[in-house]
Length: 471
Image 1: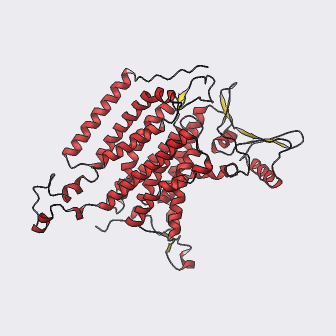
Image 2 (image 1 turned 180 degrees about the horizontal axis):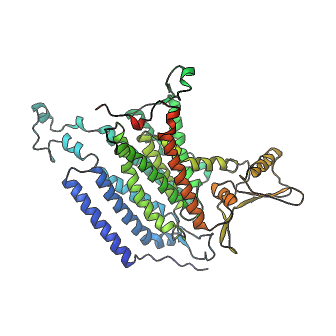
Image 3 (image 1 turned 60 degrees about the vertical axis):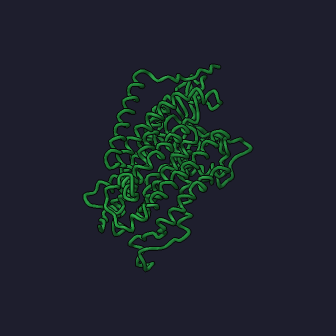
């Protein structure tokens, strides 16, 4: 069996393009510091550096990962004798964290100038009492910095979990709830800085309840903790073909960025502008590292992303939605992931046998992907109530069942959205399946934003996008 390693060298064109990108981004950063430290411009420049760094390091470190045993074969290919490096999402996560840490001075540049008696504030005329204090630290937005740092801590925690999973292959029942621990810094800052646990009732319920708001109290924190568990795991469950983990994450990030732009580009000051700028500061570098990874992971893949990227991507979405105060909007963008999780529950919770991997089956003769299956022995048939449920799902084209001559179930397709898509659409190429699922994610997400900002007005009095600042 061949053990050929992919080339680690960048081509001449890649080197020229990446070098030009680094120079342009560096120049933009220098201009940002010479000016007023425009954070959004600096974030865009750092995102370009994140792309260049991730792209180069994925290529350079691939052979090193293979030598360290972090490798695997692509089972959905005919010629799959050579190994590909795994856990390359860990590189993207580390580059992302370093970029976010380097970005910290930019959103607080003006605040640092105002809060210090030196460093650009020497020409400001101050009252005597302030001169005696030396520094005006009471004017610095400590809560804003705390939110930023808590987000970094949560992302570092989930990255460690992902790397541990890639290295030690942690079992599902052991790792499923670990993201809740990574969410503790977020929830603490939410409690201290924001603390809103009330939800707005639909207008048709308000006459019966007698109020517009209902305070959920500690249940709201339970909801956010559950959300922190679900989001990273949902990206990890919808996986198994080249590029699908990264492409779905990029689509969700782009939709979140588009939603942020709706609040930032309003013709009037909006009270949620700072929250959505905070979101963009985390999303832009994420898109930078993700596009670099997608280039290497798209069909035919040269690297595997590993569980690290899935957990890291899901936690990025949690961070921006909780600290940006739009977690319900994110749920609308995760509808395919929610459906995939609900659809997978019979196997995830042991009602139906669950194989180690449920990725679609590759037919080497045709070169196409087909739904993978769970086999049933003659003496190990599903219980009557489960059998009726399986046959009912098959009637609604939500499952494929193969029976023997006596009517006993021989095979059932595995419960994932990728296999279901193949049940609906028939066998197809791996890259075609990835493209169709990605397009579906985009269309469902756009419809979710339409529901959030337009259809929601049918049951709520107003959309917060239309709220104007009092300033």
